[in-house]
Amino acid sequence: MTQTSTALIAEYWGIGVFILAVLGLCAFMIVASAFLGGRSRGRSKDLPFESGIIGAGSARQRFSVKFYLVAMLFVIFDIEAVFLFAWAVSIREVGWTGFWGATIFIVILLAGLLYDSRVGALEWAPRRRQPK
View 1 (cartoon, one colour):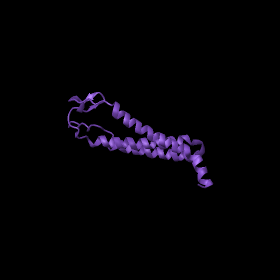
View 2 (view 1 turned 180 degrees about the vertical axis):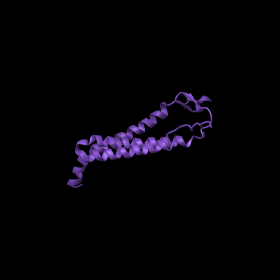
View 3 (view 1 turned 120 degrees about the horizontal axis):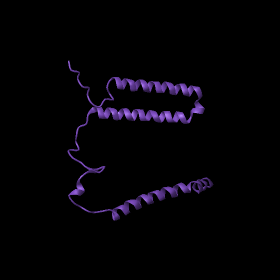
View 4 (view 1 turned 60 degrees about the vertical axis):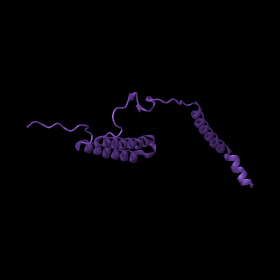
């Protein structure tokens, strides 16, 4: 070994020990759960159980497209909130340029939200018909 490789090993040996410890801990948890886990069988054991409610009906139930639309809108606005958080953390470094950039960003978000509201993307139920 050369002097350089010895210096690298001396510098990074802790990372190797950490990786080995993590792999060992993962293997231990898998083996321990296999030995200590429950093995009971029964008719009720195969029933799906979610949040304290025994399921009724098929798992292939159809959902309205509105559900997926609202879910996508939530994800989009949630990601944009992360961008605004990053802006808020660096407010002193970005100055007025960053402030006006964030203002334009928020105005575009509000325009998108207004548009979604106008086209009915945020409504769960269809509108009632007005009697003629």
